Length: 414
Image (cartoon, rainbow, N blue to C red):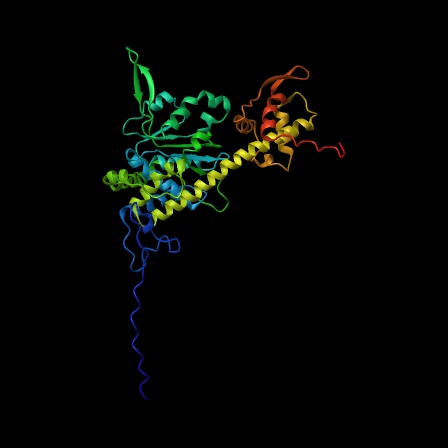
């Protein structure tokens, strides 16, 4: 048989063109949004991951092993926040990490467990005094970790008792905001530093001034198909400590570089101050992290801005619904808190039945009314029964300012 037709020689494939690698402090050189954020490591032509890229990726996977977070942006934020604690003395601002959820068993304490074993010099507390905390902060600050923060700020009465702690957490967000105390036999004024990064976990939102200075992680209960590994201290802390040591080895030589970075930020004002340390760490790592950090910053900051607006609108909605509740009862001079909550939580056309898994609580009611200066108090009702409640007069000024009754229409021909 005749020889088969010889095949034409194939031309060599053109070498693939890879996106530019992120350069610290130069986000314009980062991978464009249309390019893959993280090409698989076995793809030809991909530069080996730097130690910064790799240790951040490994830390993110350790966090993912033990907790379910609400989004990939949240995993990015937690990872970068942990890394940023190891360069605290390089930053102008010390972002808080607010780990909040609507109820128990949302994974808040578990996330704090993982964070505790990987941050710089953890100082964990459940119910410490403000004096004890600020005396623990030095020029090389620890990382404050506060579990059950709702026990400090969960109600107006408790929050008032812990006003000093709230002030400390607010002041410590920015460098050079010391607290002054008179101490010693000569009653000399002493300055105590307050600057330190802090993570706070609790049920419900923290005070607005703290939330405004925080990277907010909104936890939720795991769904039926969401599985995580159990966390056992003696078994699982060694790998986290190994990651912590790798973070120190990578970041310690970059302290001066971190101080000089002024990264381009996708947000402004306080949100930029809060997110800047995380974006700096991402820029120092390079690879996909600069894009991941800025995407997380933009998405999460926008969500919290919307939450702030919703909270304001929600509290005004509450004022209007309380006015209707009084009207339902015939506009009595006083209304018990229990009766008011009963009316609100039975109205299916309002958000209150689904405000939490048990509806609006007395504590939630108090928090929403706090900004208007309206508080429940013990009062005497019909039959000389004493119970907590509100007077109609308490709401009159706020009703007039924020949700006034529509003016009656003029009578035709008047």
